[in-house]
Length: 359
Ligand SMILES: [Fe+2]
Image (cartoon, rainbow, N blue to C red):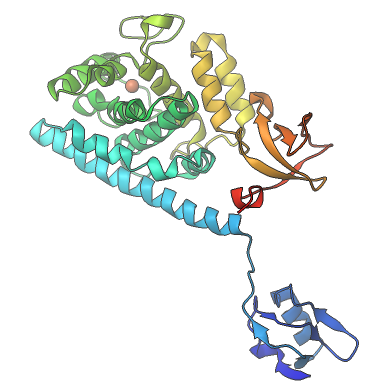
């Protein structure tokens, strides 16, 4: 047996054979890492040495999912921060030169592509993302992310997702010219500010037209405050008269306002409140677009492979907006569907594709 000094063994490392306290007392097998708890216990027992007939070895300590998520969250954070900085510069450039190039911003929107395969992570990051100073750039970025996720959920093709993203980035550009900041604050607006609020879609439309942006992008800025029930502004358009991008951006803005933190309020944590709000007919939101957002919020979207609490591997086949954490799954190789539930079969973890498909 080889002797190893406890305080010299690195936490998380493993041994090629079992690690023993003495001849009979095994501390850890070759599959398990040397944990912080084990180290603390041994030192508490005043046990300075342990034995093994094996030798130290590298061990895969963490599940692949966890590593992927950590890296992805960093990428998402970088994307939000970089795009917000980019938008601050763009807004300054517009104010100064009165010019904007569509192709340049479309390329910027395209940089979200590597991240949109994880809409749940993106939306969760958006909920915790704080804004301190520049609401205009912050709101532009969060609206763009949420709008693209809704568009993806509606299965829009890539060229339309890019247009939608640009439209969301610039839907409030009219406000920049009128009254900056006040739109996002809680204080009572002055008469002048209320007038500005009312005309900002028209001002924005004219600005984007002058930059030669595509018409659907300009219309999104013009119509993003219109509502299905005709109670929006500035034209009081209803239902089919409102363009799809405008419907999506209107809902993205409301979602952002509800869920994100602001200096004067905490964001909502519960999707239940969100569902209740969107189901309120007076709000006049399009139900198909709302459902697309709610489905994108599911931690278990359709098509995902999961491991169930009964040990079987399954694929998510349906998600109910009221019950996002408990989707309907189909066990691989079986035909019947199972409704997962809090007190029944639950999802233990998400599976990698390599775990369900032959190499
Ligand atoms: Fe607006």
